[in-house]
Image (tube, rainbow over all chains, first blue to last red; front, side, top):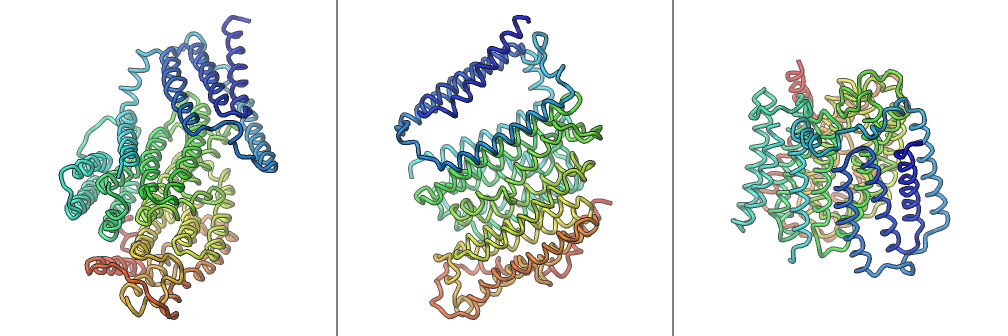
Length: 166
Length: 462
């Protein structure tokens, strides 16, 4: 087993464990902290795929900015384990069954996928390097890139409209 | 490309016009001018005049079908502005921004009708959705509006997540990894499970966006909570725009394996028609009833997806036009009212005979009574399904559901004409009434000569 594989397994276990703990944790603050671990593990996966830029952006945007926002919201609203509403038992069971069925379907689909060998370009993949990413973004994908500006503009207009004092 | 660029630019123009001009009149004029401009550039593009020669990398594909549905969306928005822009001013103090957001939504619709890669579909759907979340919450003091906005945002974000997951699966299932519709369509004779999951997730998320059952649970609350003007916009122009994207996606990417997913769509149609119509019967508020009726109408529009033949493509354009006009008209009348219950319509025919008459025409069109546009729209949908030859049971079921729908549409007509009551005072100007009459005339003309619009289609296709 090479070092990459060992790292992959460690990171995967970290990610799955963290994701489970996000759901299971009673206190929302703990959930957020576990979520940060998930993001770190996923960033580790990006590095294994030789996508350093994505790894760093993932850390800065998600683990950095968005998680801090989450924590702020949770703390400002003073949410803790006591304020969490009691959910119906049957609702929980239904949720578990539905989610489990979806998981089963996903696993079945991925198990039969005929491209297992080429799924990951470990070590030699180079699309995640900032040079190649920039070339792809501003050549092949320049149209979606430009059009997404409309999306961000409308989101900004919306933030101002909602946040402005009347 | 013309309409995408111009609508984005005009959105920015509207945004800044709020800075320089405080007068409502000039804002409305600006918006109307912008829409006429959009209609003109879109028609020019239909005739082959492309203003912008951009290397699109094949990511957008401007077919007459998409461009024509753009025209329907722009024309409907023009009518919507003429009828309802006073209500937009009453919703809040940020009218210029609301107009800007509506233009951004139109930009999104132009993308969704012309995408050629799943990436653009996603961007288009998001450009449509995000302004809508804001417009839903435009009445900031109204708790129902706030709730609707948050609900819509959470559910919409979740369904977008499902859509992205589906796109990721499809990317993995294509041989070299591609978002292009052509690559997804070609060479998939033996569809892998990965591919089918992607297809299914896209079906689910698009059904959510057009509020088809069983993914419709957000619709009544959001349509009911949102300010009435924006409900009108959401339920008509946006819904039919997304429908065109839905049909383009399944026609272009998954058309060859139609037999694999046709039954799923049939089940979705049956449940949409059933839930929409039956629940609408029990509503006490006209606004909420119209929300359920829009679910039921979505069931009819889904027939175009089921059939995917030429009949269906003509029919969906006609349906979009008929449904948009009638629903915008009813919502425009409703927006002038204080009381949204059925009792609020009591005795309306005595005090406002003209408005009661046009409302009746719109309701008849929605119910699909002959001589109105709605009849031929429904006829085309059912004929398209019959042409496939497999779905006679569904067509019979749909006709039965249409019969149920007559009940709740006629409840309003009955209240207006046959019940006595203290009629409400409507704040309607003479211009509003003329505009409403014009819309009613179009509904009837489309009902008597649907061939006019269809012929336009043939001229373009052939």
